[in-house]
Amino acid sequence: MTLRLVIVNKAYSSWSLRPWITMTHFGIPFEETVIPMNRPETRGEIMKFSPTGKCPALIDGDTTVWESLAIIEYLAESFPDLALWPRDKAARALARCLANEMHGGFQALRNHCPTQFLRPVRKKALNEAVAADVARIEAAWGDARARYGAGGPFLFGAFTAADAMFAPVVNRFHTYDVEVSAATRAYMAAIMALPAWKAWIAGAEGEPWRIDYYDQV
Ligand SMILES: N[C@@H](CCC(=O)N[C@@H](CS)C(=O)NCC(=O)O)C(=O)O
Image (tube, rainbow, N blue to C red; front, side, top):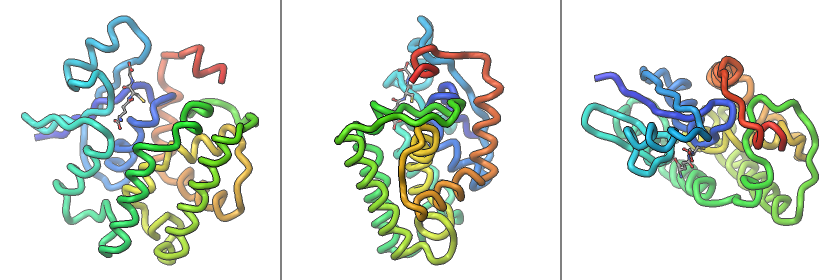
């Protein structure tokens, strides 16, 4: 049975990107349904797939999985031959810590700098709370890279679900021209060079829907 991933606009959706880039990068076949946000019918359309009225949602036959991180865990269980998480237990524990920290945190950064995959690079001043989020993210990335990143340019060497969880932050740092270290820039460049990243941006560019609020931030 073909997996179906239900997402909202690629131009703006950070949560949708996470499972999408995971599945695309690892070559997991799926069909996608894109529901445009900010329309009167949006919630009803999403509710056909997800009880939360939020995307992403993964449909696998009779099984529906929502919440980006739960979807990634479901995929990791469904495709055990693919190293969605690092193979080493201690590395995997750190990867899950970081993924959970991202899933539940960094609210200041998320509110101040919404993901916007089509926004030209333009600097935005950061307040103290956002700067603290940026500092913590840089420290977390640096720690993972120092301990487990020797085998490649990603947090745990090869691309894993931890990178997928942070991929929208790469967009935020990039498009709001956040001042970060050279090491952070190198990590961002590696993410933005991924074919799966480029495919997401191309998808966003091809969408006919624009939302003023996000376009003006
Ligand atoms: N914690 C959820 C967040 C899901 C979420 O907020 N999705 C947003 C898109 S980024 C959504 O579906 N918004 C549609 C709407 O509110 O109408 C997850 O990890 O999947």
